[in-house]
Length: 155
Image (cartoon, rainbow, N blue to C red; front, side, top):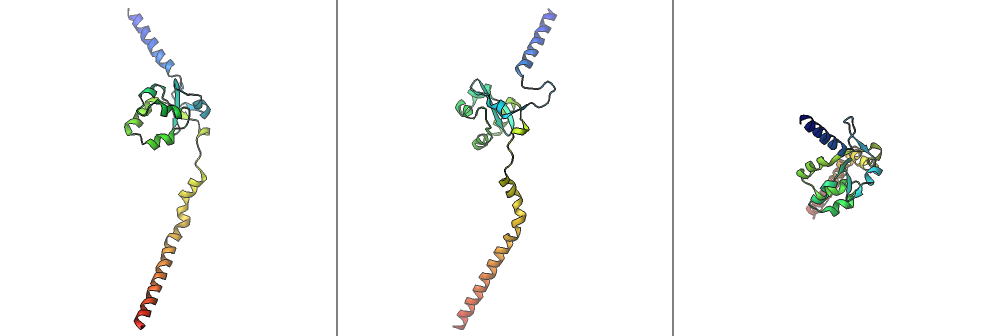
């Protein structure tokens, strides 16, 4: 009887491994291309990209408080902006981790735009204008004040 139970346990463990076919056998991170994620855009098979991480949310569709329609609209795509716009709670972010299956391939990640880079480095190039313009304005206001005060004294 002991052998039958042991083989049953082994089969159950094998079933669990078979269900999780997305994880690589070496235990590392599985990378998916944007095209692979886009293929999973149906209610029975729904993947999302959020912050360059890939999630299989198929089992969560019916449980989603906002309804499955909003998830289906984003299915197979990058839902980062929508996810952040809604303002999900810490609990929702923690719950999301149980659906994690891998990362978006490095070649498919969005590059930061040049505009963003310019904005972050522009502080140094414009720092002199932040003090020069107010200084010139203060000198002009002071000169105008003195001029009008002298005019009113002499009258």
